[in-house]
Amino acid sequence: MTRIGLYPGTFDPLTYGHLDIMTRASHICDILVIGVAENSGKSPIFSLNERLEIIQEQMGLAQKKQKTNKEIIVKSFTGLLTDFAQTVEANFIIRGLRAVSDFEYEFQMASANRRLRGNLETIFLTASENQHFVASSLVKEIAKFGGDISSFVPPEVEARIKLYFSNT
Image 1 (cartoon, one colour):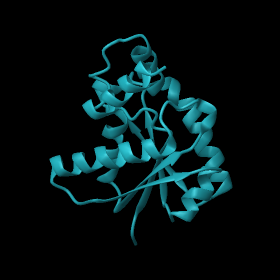
Image 2: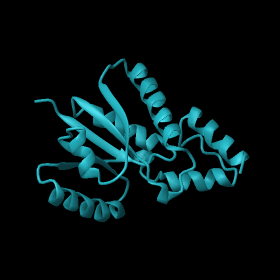
Image 3: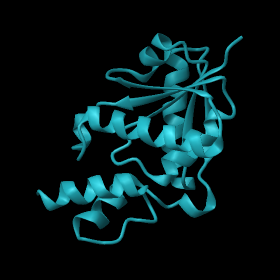
């Protein structure tokens, strides 16, 4: 049986924390699907297509660095996560936990997802020690005021963020 893991998120912007979870998740499944949520309600700074492009670029670089050819698929979705999981035939959802405060919300979502699709498991991966406090909203706030975000995001992402805020 092929184990398909689904790591969903808005990824706006993609951070080193996201990349850490993606890389580690790829080791526990045969195929990793990175589901990029449209989620216009969060007022993303990057379009859906830009976020897809950024993730594909960064995962390609990560795989090259690690010398691995693990199958990683990057797809967008709207609507219920459980419907998307069924579409991509995911066996489990992967969620990253940064702090204890994340657990309550993620546990609630995992329970709801399980009720909607009983055979869909959720696996929690804790953030790496040096990334446990990094949130996309924090990165955007720092960047908006000209702060140094180089320790939070890859250089290519940093350049795109700086360009975005220089035009606003």
